[in-house]
Length: 343
Image (cartoon, rainbow, N blue to C red; front, side, top):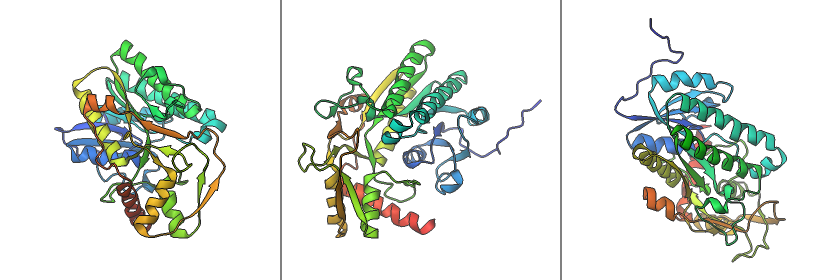
């Protein structure tokens, strides 16, 4: 007897390592898929609303699934494409929303992720790369997040949800030999310089696209807080280019191919920029005036948070290549011009 598969037989190279990318049609996920594809791997994308993201199938196969409701449909995918590793990026990420609606975050970011991990473990897929967050640290005393479990004190449900999964992965490594790398992201920024993939959100929250929108529309650009103890009074953040984030995932996958364990790394540049610097950089590059209006501080915002990435560099030799504001702003602007034409 033969088993009839529910998905059409699409060609993938058996010589390539197939990587399941959950959330692979999203902002960071789509860049990861491009980098994986360009480096000899085959990304298999699982996401929802794929039809709204025309680039979802540009660098691999893509399947429209709603998790966890359709978790059972993953079985055919992992068997058909001989999945070697899973990268998990499907999570809710709005800190403020997590405070007012924690159940949404714990159900998706924790319960759904645990179901996915259990499925992978039962299927014999023992390599897992988890999209974690700098929010696991809470408020570091000196603004620097160091790769140490001793300093993890998240202050909101979003950060807590990420830390819960990191703890689960530690236990699963000991009990089931389930190997993982948790990458604690800092502020993702920029876009693919070739404008082949990028960011498209129903409700934009990232500062550079918001600055571009403000400049192009002539509307005001809101900055929250101008009285922090920083060089210009506004919050300082570690902005890491999304192509560098994608490279970090590729290198983490290569590391897991040769090493077992449960690892946690900061994925940030180690350099901070203020939010006011972002706005002024855009104004300088494009000679566009942005009407900045300062608002009250938002609850939970920290004055400064940057990464210590020494541990990541020591283990997987990652170093950012797009580490300047100009590249982040220009690549985002290029992508916004492209996406406005095709949608």
